[in-house]
Image (cartoon, rainbow, N blue to C red; front, side, top):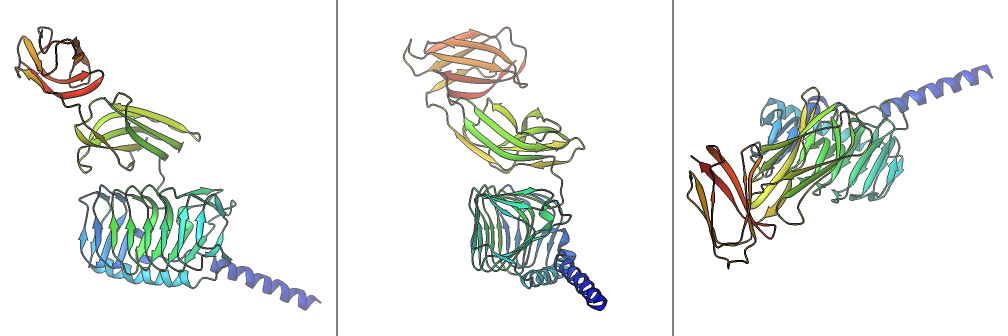
Length: 410
């Protein structure tokens, strides 16, 4: 009986050790520093992507950064990319040979909760809505999802981590193409055997490592799985105001850790951005926080906006980009002279008494210095109160903007 008991203890110990070995994270080797990589395939960035980490291809052309911002290194057809290609192949093989414990089918998300384990889909799979990884407060809890086919997310797809789950311990083995739809939010390390498309403003927290397949990126945000973000941005929207005279930016965070402030940036082409304002952040918060910013001077055409989020240590990361198209009402308006000394004349093609127009003058710092209403087709007003310098003007009719520009006072 004692011998049997000892054997049982030994078998139990061996079984537990075996489970521990199977539950270990795969060894990424030299691929550890890469966030986007393909062994064989072209690498193309077409939008204002913002990537933190190394990128590269061992066999293929590389076009990107610019456009986009890269905080890391590019490796193309060199010793580092050659070793990374080997290591990516080894990691993929490791994940593919793990024993599946649960078949979850090809449709994931819609509030689904996964606990630590090895999951398989049995075919090409999609992610729609919310997928939750619950570590159950187990240290270094490991999740592996084996997809025997292509993977694609919808625009509403997102991943949430609870009870100690980490994106560094989530691995996706994808035997086919990998596509993240615009607006989707993905977490984990994906090992892929086909082409990769990161569309629109898709966000990746982790890695995409490809054995063979082209990579195409747009205005994506990519950060390493072990990067502590100062705040969890859950929405960022831009829209015209009710009177169509300004752009309203609104965003929300679900949580903030040592957050400092937001810098709001604007661009006319989606590539070159300029700061237009700053708003202080909450600092530390585990509840929903909402922010609003107004752009009173939208450009006549496309307006692109993004947030630069800072923590108290100066670390920062960019949000995805939002676009608003703005156009002024077509009314012929002439302002002269420019530069001016003592007066300005405004000439319009409207009928007298039916213009109901307004002229606002602003200093470069945004302070309004004049606000004048007029209805004449030719209207002149004195400018003796204005100091020499540059001014920004806005002319509106019935609260709709019809002309903007700059004037210079001598």
